Image (cartoon, rainbow, N blue to C red):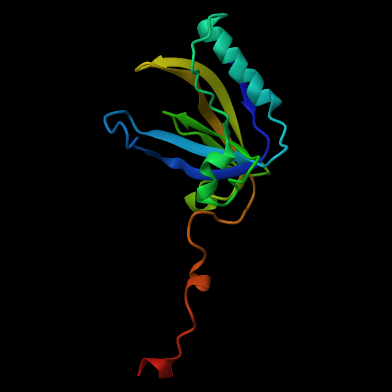
Length: 173
């Protein structure tokens, strides 16, 4: 199973410091995970290559019908806003283990507030084929994350400063 580092993308739904329980299967062990969204035109050839290799490793030449592709079209999540725009693509990667997290200078990121939906990052992933409950597809294992730069926070409804007006002491009486 080979690993690749993705191009720079926008993180969404990062659960990198505390694992999350799968709401569809609460009995499953919690996992660390993130979604990463790539802007239109991003070269994802290396990601597509490891997907293809995972398919060959799992099924050889006998590919199952309705094989789930983990590299998805961003327009299916366009209702969420942010980086989900027409032509964008995204993937989700998960791990049972804490991923390594570094910044652009390769310094460890230990403050959870530095990793948020909207941060620009790269992730190191590997692909694997799976067959479970009648579903066949390829998934991504998450190894490491590199925060490249801050980005506009997404999915939070804006900043506190933009949500309120100034209140004067005279207005409170």
